[in-house]
Amino acid sequence: QTVALGQQICAGLEAIHAQGIVHRDLKPENIMVDRAGHPIVMDFGMAYQAGAQKLTRDGAVLGTIAYLSPEQAHGAPTDPRTDIWAVGLVLFEMLTGRRAPADDAPVPLAVRENESCPPPSRFVAEVPPALDAIVGRCLERDPKARYGSATDLRQALAAVAGVSSSSGRSAPLAVLRAR
Image (spheres, rainbow, N blue to C red):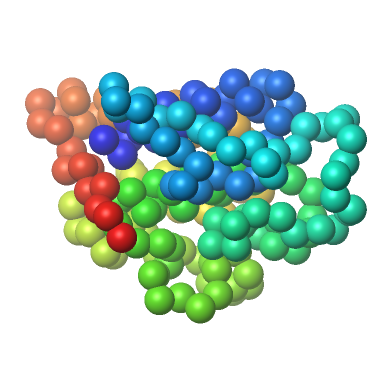
């Protein structure tokens, strides 16, 4: 379920990124799942479109603090890779049932300069190494080290889905725990 939902979230991001829009506030509360099980990316109140009139001054920090990317936390320019960071956090949460790096963290991951996110498998042993790697790449502090686009991330998730389906068994990814 995590992989399938992740792919569909990426497809939604592909559509908005193609329009030059960066969501900048992607979080579980802004992803609704319809009755058919399809996620819908919602709430574009913090979205930014390149070339559009700015409603905030340069250097302003916008978004939900737990899901801010490092560049957002420092008031730096954002681009689609900002949303990739947020997808990584959402995937981590779907896989583990907790926010990264832990529910009891007083400060969000984005502002912990020398701390990286532990792999989801540290909390749920059944998470395959390939998904650990995907989440880890999404959560690279340097945006250039993340997936370059939602398409790249969707393709990486599709590769994981292909491996689990071609092995004749489904991967144990249906964690989706309530907090």
